[in-house]
Image 1: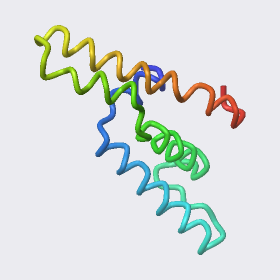
Image 2 (image 1 turned 30 degrees about the vertical axis):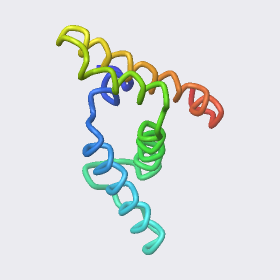
Image 3 (image 1 turned 90 degrees about the vertical axis):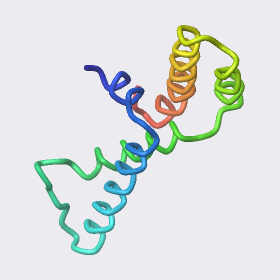
Image 4 (image 1 turned 180 degrees about the vertical axis):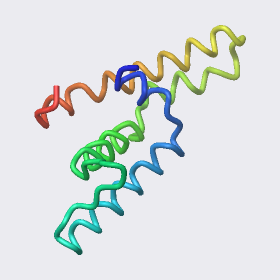
Length: 103
């Protein structure tokens, strides 16, 4: 499973949990000076995932418009709207991630 597939399959609640965990780990690192290693996780990686999660949760008027149409559509098209909204969010991430050096 690719990172983009993984990120697109996460719910907003999951993204929030990842952000909270990353913040906690970064705070522990700042307090102790030594990075904690729960299950061998790199705190910098968790910080980057937290930033990506934050970017995925930013409002997008295009996604909002598509999602507002969902109640008017039949189920097969509702699924297409969900997929299109996920794609729009991922496309919005690309310039931001490449600007930070992570292409």
